[in-house]
Length: 471
Figure 1 (tube, one colour):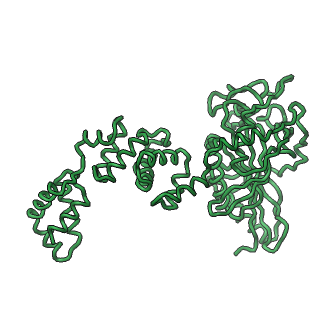
Figure 2 (tube, rainbow, N blue to C red):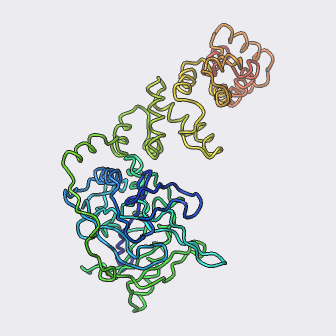
Figure 3 (cartoon, helix red, strand yellow):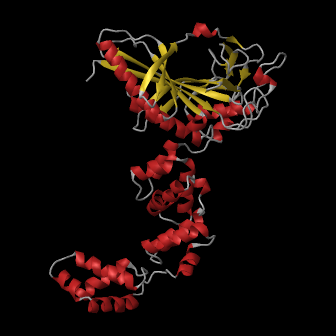
């Protein structure tokens, strides 16, 4: 065991799912021509004034409700002053001492929770692009509505940080706060880490890590920084408060700059925006409209017959996958069978085509019909896969596809018995092998029957007939 205790806190920036920016009417969508979605407000031109996008406040409040935060009925905006090329005004409109909510928590997936300090609402900066010809600035992102979710120093391992982010992302997606696409920059994370002697009562000096573009990257960067600080302290050195960048290719952090303090930003109340009063009625309205969240859905799925913890984790990882699963069961598919199809053939097709369940070609009622046909013995597992492949490219039901392929399962015992008897008569060696105690010979005989019927025989019934005739 290390002589030091690791303390980790995360700061997560999340772009809200909105059509326009926080204080300007400029639209926002990922991509597009550089500097094509910029208004006079975003550019900070003289004489222009910001105006709050009320939808941004509503979506931000949804995040607070989903994360069990205490909402402040009075809040305000502040100016955070710093100069950088991607911030045309020379300041960012953010929140300092009166954020719109405080507290809250994020589940870690094992019954424990990590506490939040607060969430505040702010505008995003633009994006710097460094090229061989020099540095360029794209201001399409400038002014986009963000919430910054500030975690308490509650985490003690890099793995807990990973789990925190996974569960946070799920909640924000379920609550329709954000798409949380890290590749598009709509979810970004900075990690703070410090080490302290195990018998100490005061936190150690923290280091902030930036440039973390995936949850796995967060975990790797924290593991590296944990080792670096342990070695530094063990050799008698001291950790200085500063910001470091993560280099994923080299697998290491590198010093970037000294860490700014609150005084460096010279916060003061935003003079162009009045304080905001949030009504109890608005909070009640938003709370009533919240969809079922992941923890509640997992609890409900535990009551369904046959589902394992693994099934439940997969089915709740994506809200839309869970909704498709529920549409299958509503249409008559057994829960476990529906789960098996989703985690098997459906997932294979989605992965091969780089699709989400929203793009899947087979609507839930049609797939549910196929699952019912298989469970009722109208088609066996092998044939069901052939039917599934046809249904991907034909807008027809399962029975129509089975009929078109001529794959309806043979479950007539009289018809199958004659086929089984013919196979027994024509194959004396496997019969002798079976009667001498070689159980595998029975599987060979069953395979021969399936071949004779073109794969359409009911395999369970074939097995029963074989055992009866051979006895």
